[in-house]
Length: 538
Image (cartoon, rainbow, N blue to C red; front, side, top):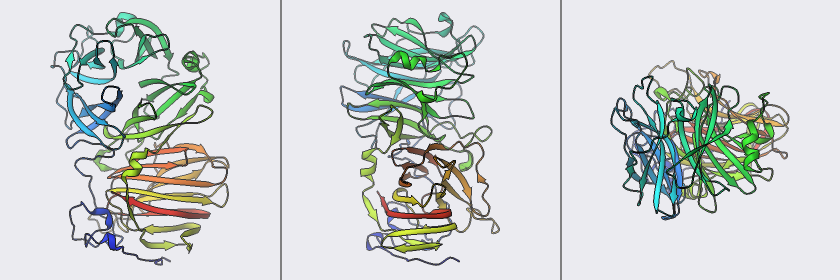
């Protein structure tokens, strides 16, 4: 039986008579905000925290810390829908000082014409040459309808003295088959300066049909020499968008696995560069478990990093979904669409060298308008001094409607090692359809006990009409906290949803319909307590 806990309407939330305090900037809608009915809601045209331009979408970010301007420049492949035939994905860019607020720099490197090597542009990276005072951006040139004699992909570059006007070097083209690598899979150049004082350019490619990351070296960024394989890829995988850096005493390779059943940002680690390179150097194909890790879910891809001298951040894109279908999240044929929103996290390094992703301080500070929590319904809940105990299967507490930009934080303490709980969004009492017989559906991030020591975040479609566990979505595995305490923070920006748990979990997702709808915390057997519940917005 559902009973009402309380209904608290804040004076600060009365700026808009028919909306919660979450919607100060939203268009007024003549709807009953006090109900729990599902509202069909759409994203804002442009988004600022998890950036999306007003036109198009963000693909494959290429972050770079600009030592001259003292800010981050994040180049990206601009995805129009539809894209022009044959010539697409010009390089656009934004700048930011804090990974939370962005300024558009517009289009910087245009596509070539339909007959040129860079008719379509692919991922690359930027480096600043102090001697020439020039920025170099190396990128992938994709040939339109390549013949057998053409190179489907090749490496090219452009330079700029001011990061505004860029000039392509028409005389430079690095082709894989000149060095025994693939003609058509030769992409994603990444530049860094090694301990040997030379510039290194890593290229994701294949050789003799096997994936490899090729290493080219240079003294001047103009003439390059093949330095052999930086790392061979295991099994039939392909490591896209490689990114190498040193953090503390460890070297890392961050990459994105394009394999359809995986599609995640991952990393290898080593105490030396040689140890890093050797992570996959075994004929048996044994995965180096003590030297690898996963950084996020399938909702975060093509992640690459940059450091400002204090913090290292990672930027990737969260894909949109066909037909705004929240269940189009898994492997083929339910792959999400290419490109979406720019998402940033802070890299957290642990004592053993492992990496996790954490909150960006400036994003947290941005959500500075605190709202009181309004409870709408509850089942199996007892309350005492701001602490709520949820007991038994199907215990939940339903909270009032969210706005476009929400920060939700709370602490869950489980009573034993097998308690299961979840956080549901886009929740109401009917589906967003004109069919009066349609069943309720909502979307839940479930913290599921895999064993007495391991937990896994799953994404599920719940409700009477929900399919439950969504096939193909690979969740995030992590160690159960020894004290059974889960400090949870969730940020939403329109349909983008990012959840952090302790310093162990980062789970990026896209859930359409978050804004203007209710949300809940759920228990699935046993007992959990919820405390320190706060909501803030901007």
